[in-house]
Image (cartoon, rainbow, N blue to C red; front, side, top):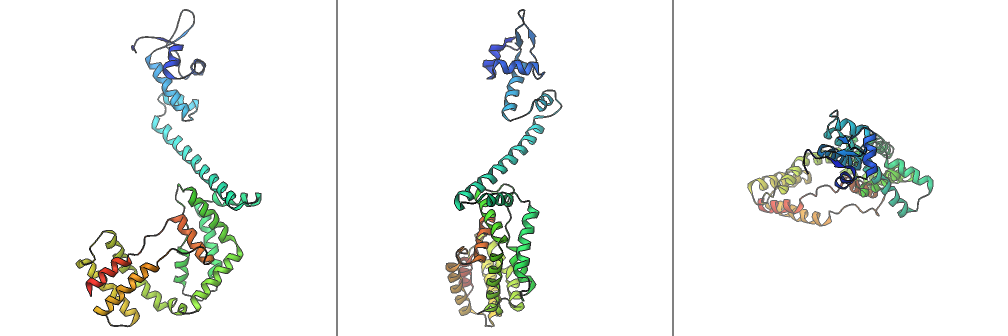
Length: 319
């Protein structure tokens, strides 16, 4: 293609993929004017004009408006500015489509009524503040009047769904079900009764007592050190691992009021391996609280598993 050559509109249409009528429209709209007009009044375009028309076609395919295209071609706006604006719009549309897909899938699964569809759409479109407020209201009612330490209530409240900026359809579906669940008064009463029973029967009074909560808080930094070391593939028989195991065994011996020693550490290792076998995500069929936690996990993703077997190996190495 010669830089100083002029091309008739038919050739320009073939080179740019635009129709002749579209090229004429852009010329009449003042977007890309022809470089010259032939003796018979035919429009002629140079290489620069063809390049501008190719850019116009690309921008139109990205849903840019004529005013936006004019500003870009006139140098009043950069392509980067235009791309940023349209990326925001595309992401907003994508989010709306994900929400609609989640609602439609929930309708197919539950066979919802028109009123329920409206509610689901509202739940899916909640802001972060509205979601937090709904969960706060749920826990405020569920824990009101329960005679347990306030920090235990705070631990329960901390288990809440946090939708990412770009949630998947599965996350949205889980949130819709969760939001519907916590609004149900019967569910709130059932969760309240379940937590009451948990704290008042069997080992519940001991496990929810201030001394036991103190002990669990004291174990948090040791457990975090074990998780960090296991994640970093620190050998369980290394000096670092044995030091973590000694801290864990000492903490456990203090809680159980037993002397620390090789036999104690081997027994603790056996218990760690048993705990690894028993550590399973909550079954949604067990009760409303378990269903709540299952849905929170579906929204947030599964938390990092505690390295029971790594700690068991470290305890044996330190015995």
